[in-house]
Image (cartoon, one colour):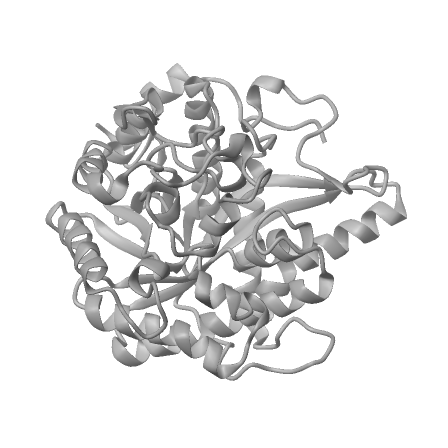
Length: 442
């Protein structure tokens, strides 16, 4: 295939992957705060639980064969802290050995593991000691102990580490919106949780670099494109600016300056310059207005109902991933970026295919603009437990029958495999999907 036939060619060493998290696919994670949360009536759509999830803990070899079919060269996964330390200071060596088998299987398939150390879940015993609102040294030392054990165990096999997944989501959705544990609606708790998570990232970063200086360590940041619903409304603009700072700007500012997000100007030692790369999770825009009872919406007034993310109601905005990449570039001019999550929950797999193409076009444009995007991980490898939405929203390239656990590659998976194989979106694909990039009616 000639270069002329490739309409959207990516750099030669581009990383192609897909992503998952332990709690959403493994099943049997009964020792963390999310399992406790799932047992409370009304917290999870349909009363679903992660008890079985995708049974990945027992089926990982089958699932990693799917990665080979997708042609990917990388896989983002997480280690479940509560499996490894079901009790304080007492590591479960069987669980550690199981993760060794997972990592070894990936490496044998020439798939590079990108491992996340904290993806929303923490041990229930740690949560009961105050969770993210407790920043005392003795409390944070538990996390440091976990990190140190993992890095010493896996430093020969794993070279890419994500410390914290979406600290802003953990803080805002759990402590301000209240639909994730601990279910609070407190601005003070949101600030406290944000700062604790930044401290945990800092501790993890420097402990990892001390043990294995050659490793690459980053944090995963979710960015939502936040706009005032009515541009002519000063109040909408003020609220939108505040929301953008709370959700997007505060974490980025802290990582850049080393100053924690609080009413006092204080620094956390070595937070500044604690990144070798940054991960971007991008999904959605948000419209803000005091006109809305809930203050925010994730769709325009007249969206195409067939294009919305099932359960979550998000209306796609492909251009937003370009805007998010530009924002990171402006904040961290020389920092490599990996798109660590991007995807949509839908039963319309043809629309998922369009979604992937539309967003990759924008990623390609970002690279053409000189933004150092090193890789793209589609969320998710397979349908899974989508937190508060339970099993109602299917994000996977692979369909999972939750009754039989049968895996079936979707057409979107086949398309993604073709894109990865060709390292770009070819003329053949563009002829099949000729429409312009989807644009909400802002």
